[in-house]
Image (cartoon, rainbow, N blue to C red):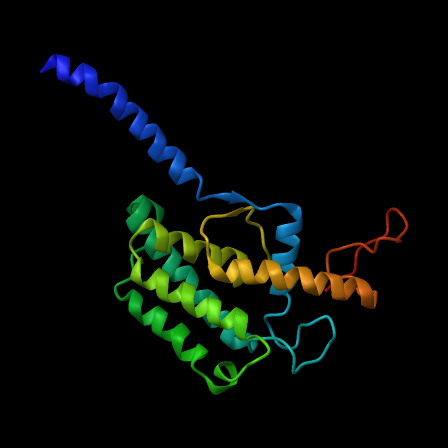
Length: 206
């Protein structure tokens, strides 16, 4: 028996190390360019707050954006409870209720018929469906974490992407396009300083 244990121990140790490494590979430290692209598209999410000052542009009404953000944070905390333990989150009695609140918003005609933002809305629907299926597992937690901290937030402070959320990839791709359009139009997004601005110049304020 001792001989068997001595033979198996190295394999068990290697297996444990591989498990840890595979788990950590899910986490991506966002480059400055990726974070900028995500944040640029995030600025398109709330109507009436866009750089072009067109109140009809943008994806969500502010009250809808805020409700989705609230529900996602509650779901994020709920998944934290199951994945990392009670000390790290707060369990919801009925997590389906929060998913239903988000879905009720996305089912509104103004969003279902929004062709201009179809790629973003479809990817969001797919991520929500996956996180709902995996709500008490690491995969579900990581998707909810990314949606709560990188998408439905007033300011991005997170430096990492935990999941392969489709929504984040769409925001990266479309954010890059918006940054290029801004450059052509001579528009400086909030928080960034124009390339030809003198040293010490304050960046544009939102």
